[in-house]
Each structure stands twice: as C-alpha cells, then as structure tokens.
Image (cartoon, rainbow, N blue to C red; front, side, top):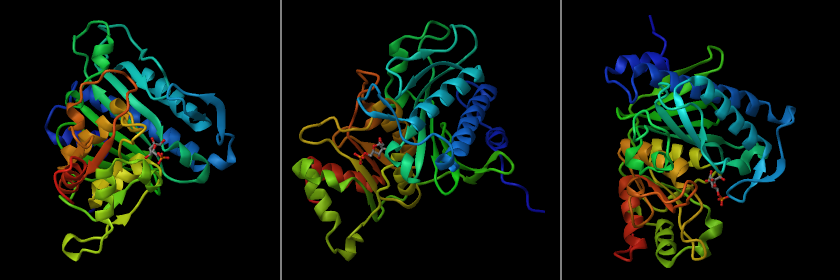
Length: 336
Ligand code: P6P
C-alpha cells in the first residue's frame, strides 16, 4: 500500500528534533504560513478574473509602486499571523514600521520578517511569484520587543522559508534540520513532503541575473559574467541564463539544479536592490543549510550586522563553487 507523502505536521513530528520555539508553536506557525500560501494561491490562480491586477497608486517605504496584490498579500500575512497566536511582532517589506501583535509574556515566541509578495513585476503577466519569511526569537525572553530583537544577523535566524507560486504551490523550509520542500495538493488542502533534505550541487551550469544592468556593474562582476559565457567544455561553459524576475523562483531553480543568482551592487547603487532582513537573510540560510553559499561579493550574508529594517544588500547566492568564483573575480583575485 503506498502511503501518502507526509504532511508538514507529520514530517515535523517524525523528525525527532524539537524545532525552534517547540514542536507545537512551530507546527502552528508553519500551518498558518501554509494558510497564507493557500489564500494567495487561490487569488493568484484567478487573478485575471477578480479585481486584483494593476497598482494601488501608492508607493511603499521602498519607494516602489505598490501592486494591488502586494497590498492583498501583506494584509493576508498580518491577519493570519495575528490569528496564529504564536507571533509576537512582524516586519514587512510593505510596512515602514514593525507591527507588535501581542504583549510580552503571552506565549507568542516568534518574530517574523517577510516579503509578502516577491516578484511584483510578474503579477499582471502570469509569471511566477513568491513570499519569503525569516523567523527569529526575541533576545530578551518575555520582554517588550525592541528594534534590536528584529534587526538580527542572519546567523541568528531560527528558521526561514518561502512560498513559491509556480506551476505548483510549494513551501520550502529550513529550521536547523535540513531544507525540505512541500507541495500543495489543492484537493486535499495539504502541503505534502516532496523534496526531503534538499542539497544544492557544489557547482552548476545556470545563472540568474538581470543582464540589462550589465553596464552598471563593477568591472569584476562584468569580467565574471563574460567568463560564464565563454565556450569552455572543461568548465561546463557557457552557462544557461535563466531569469524570471522573481527572486524566489530563480533561487529555487538554483537550489535544485545548482548555479548562481546575482543581484550585485551597481556603481550608482553599491548597496544593490534586494533587502537584507526578509529577502537575502532567509534565502541565505536556506541555501547554506542545503550546502551552498550566499555573499555580498565580499562578505557572507549571514554575518552582516543590520543597521536598518529595510536596508539593501548585493546578493550573490547559489552553489558554493560558483559563488567562490564570483567573489574571486569581484575581489580581483583571479579570473573565473
Ligand atoms: P529587476 C522583485 O521586485 C525583486 O525584488 C526580486 O523578486 C527580483 O529578483 C528582482 O526584484 C527583480 O529586479 O531589477 O530585475 O526587475
């Protein structure tokens, strides 16, 4: 008799390790993130038929035009995580300030930082989208949540994950015992284990980057990129370019098949575009726990000491061998 693949709850119970904050609260947290995924998947699957496309006419704290689906996704995250009863405070790409959901001491162990809808340029053209979340525990036990509790180095994350709204809806999670992927069965309404203990190849043959920015990149990055396109069988080059405009989708591909995703700093914008606390840090934790690497080009992402909630960082992430080659080129140490 073929058993059904495990649900998230069954898998967490079978792991034998106690997840951060305890099995009960962590299972509840992932269950509520799963509800967010089901709600968003439902809206996205019929986006053209309901009034959720286009923009709200507002700009967010990032100075970016807010799509209707950005706002909807943010509202779903805040509402569902508030209902969960296990989240004490939130940080969102779409909100300037943190939101405190419960007073200290009410047994809500988690601080959750998230990008509610990643890949917004894809909302109106039926391309992949994602959500990214990072989980930390307050540094001061039951006390009031301070900004310092939220602005933590990536190494302090106790869990991280993403929802991917692609040809199927997936939940990928890293919580200290490997990286595991669950696929939503919309008929059962359950996320079922489909990718246990994901390991990224040490080197790949795929790159993801917006090459339209090529002439804004520093010389070392242009040099690395030029090398990737040379015909060199020994180095399995040229690599294949794969770029969807959704960070989650592009990094998910590289997590599974190997390679490198780059959103480097530019001469005018050395800090890059992607946000540290709820994009780079969670994806860096996931990729490192799968055996890969994540860097600014000079520093390990997870070691960065945050200075602002919405600060940006350059991101070079993927197979360890590819990230190391890119770093050496960027630092002028050698050609790739
Ligand atoms: P560009 C989406 O806004 C995002 O943050 C990532 O999902 C994506 O990889 C990147 O920006 C796309 O940026 O400049 O290539 O449009």
